[in-house]
Amino acid sequence: MFYWILFAVMLDYVYFKVKYTTPNGPPVWYVFPFVGAAPIFCLPTFIYKRIYLWYLKYGPDVILTRAPRAVVLTKGSATKAALRNENCQSKPEVYLMTYLGWILTGKDGLVYTDGGQVEWRSHRKIDVAALYALPRREMVVKSSEVVDVFLREIQKHEGEAWDCEHELEVAKYQESANLNLGSCFEDSDIKQFVAIVANVFKKMLVVSIAINIMPRSLIPWVEGLLPKIVRPAHIARVYNEALWVLIQKKLSEKEDNRTRDFLAATLRVKKPAEAHEYLRASSFFLMIGNTHSTHHTILSALTNLALEPAIQDRLYQEIKYVLGHDELTLEHLDSMPLLKAVIMETNRLDSPFPFNLRLSTAPTDILGFPIPAGMPILMFIHAENWNPDHFPQPLSFRPERFIDDQGNYLPNPNHGIFGGGKRECPGKHINITTAGVFLSKILQHYRVEPANINAKPAERISSMFPAPSKIPYRFIRRNKDLPLPLTEPASDLSEIFREVLDRVK
Ligand code: HEM
Image 1: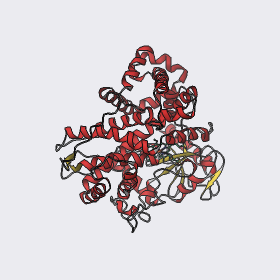
Image 2: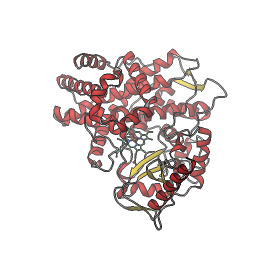
Image 3: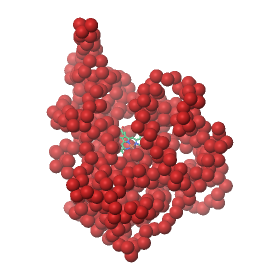
Image 4: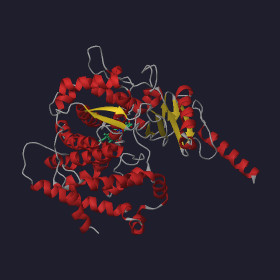
């Protein structure tokens, strides 16, 4: 038996090396038999971290390995070259994303992992138009309404040790609903929804495997056997129907000159049937892209500021000077360079996605190394963001590196967390704007401290999708004479969805 296994491993080794080694091609790393480098991403943090940092420092800029499909890994200048390469503008298909897109839209191919088969420009166009349909000024208003509710949540825990992750996540989901559909859910409904999403995320590995092996046409049949929360075809039907109800409601509302949410913005330029189709197509990123990524930024920024009180004090001075006791507006936000620097420094240190994925759609080359067509390209973003040549003392939180001598915000072209080229993240300004609304309003009213003086940030390198860096915080009210805002956003989405749920059994 042992010799048979050895023989199979040798055969696999020779097959992989012969198939992928080409004259002048990138180094080919076999790593583990049959699965290549994939198990490394599942190692315990303390071992994974060593391998990861070693690779960032000493690994070649381009290698070809397996995970378990053949994949090209890039870092440094190779990543910059790949991002701009015309033949590397597609994204490999990730079944989970295709599946999520299908749940929300009822259609294939409406997510950004196009697999090189769907024309990416058309759905990118829909996503970008959708993300920018709502004027930034209104975005600030809608986001602020939700932060006001979150401030009252903080008030309940004033002065005590509090892990605010769940409440912040709830606030971000409410914000997405408020920005896109113009209203929120009732508190108990959104809390239940967030708990369900967290539960599905925990079971992601099982869900991904099931998706890979089960034909999608079987899903409506299989879902009868599943508990209510994971009935995909049902979710798609409810979402489809609820959008119609919302569109009818918006059309019957009195118009004024302001476009207060994305749905209203869409109805201004599209007929109802088109708007419905468009909303389903773009909903994946509208509702989910904003939530998890920016939740990660806000939580990590609170941790960094709690652990660096001098930086927090400087930021508070900026907020006090610009905002004073006023309600936040877009003009205020755009006049706070240190706030933007804090957000970008947090994103640099604690990115929610330390990797980016592309796909070669034709034979091409990266830094002169020939790359075959159909090759996924996995880019190590930290190789740029943690490079001491671009960011001295790269693992320290130093927002002032993004501030010039005149005190203005200073962009750094090596900040790579949003990707680049034609497919650069179109949500980056939404991330900066909404994180800015949360942080400025929280710090206007509260000082944030670590609940435990020995608190340390969570491990920054933990897996493909690191958890946000969080600690138990203590929120101390700065000025009791400054009352907390009492805004209460509309919460009629619960009633609409409940009514639709009753109808669509
Ligand atoms: C810290 C926050 C975020 C990070 C680190 C991030 C990162 C990324 C990266 C690396 C890509 C791929 C870019 C490339 O291939 O060059 C991407 C794409 C994308 N992101 Fe983000 N993102 C963030 C926030 C957001 C937000 C808030 C939204 C929307 C509300 C969003 C929407 C999108 C969309 C629609 C795409 C696909 C673009 C396409 O298909 O071409 N992202 N993001």
